[in-house]
Image (cartoon, rainbow, N blue to C red; front, side):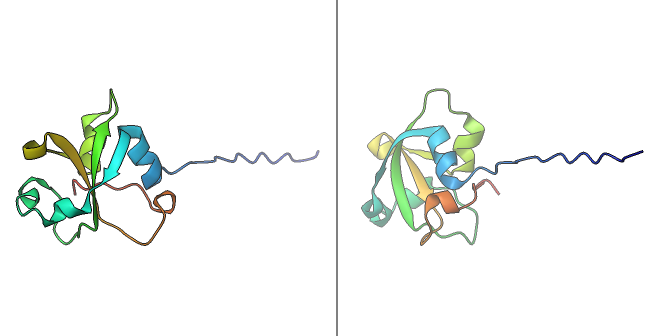
Length: 104
């Protein structure tokens, strides 16, 4: 009798940062100068020890989950009536960075 080996291959796709941002936003605009505005830090919520290297004004995608918005650290900045997204990494293309969870 001949034995039959069955190999099951799962191609598990791990979401990267670029895909994560695209699921939540429709448009993003770099606004690093806003980091110089002292009260922006009162609105941003990033884990202790994380540094913000870039800041984007974003338009949220209709139906974006609050959970995913929170994972990206996106907050409403009332003085300008916009949503802002902090980026806590630099030097690597977004599609080469793992998805983030800034709630930690």
